[in-house]
Image (tube, rainbow, N blue to C red):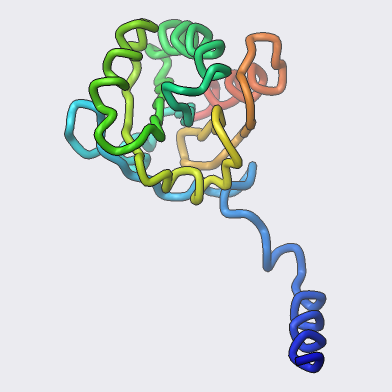
Length: 168
């Protein structure tokens, strides 16, 4: 048993950081992701290439999510004409569609809502909780990520958004 542990330790130590780099890293191509819209049809990030996408992972039971939704809606309204898309990915349990729709209506969310009751987005994007947000540029490259509530005062986000919207 000790020999196995030693061999495992040597194998881990010989890995470079490039070998264990997270899939959802700023500057890397964002992981492919697809889900079902609240409306019932399928959707994917691949179909949004050419747009700047803010992928926001949330849940109806998440109180910090409630705090950031007005800001996300404001961003969507302000920048949609520039090719900006906010995608709200709900990780609420299967069968919660009515609760998600009621939440959307209560908060005036007009941007698309995708459903992910299996929380695949959290595995792909290495989100350790909700809310979590990822800015993806027109070419599919991740330009910014954040775990926690998004705020208008976050200049790292506003700079990344401005640069992404300005690029073709």
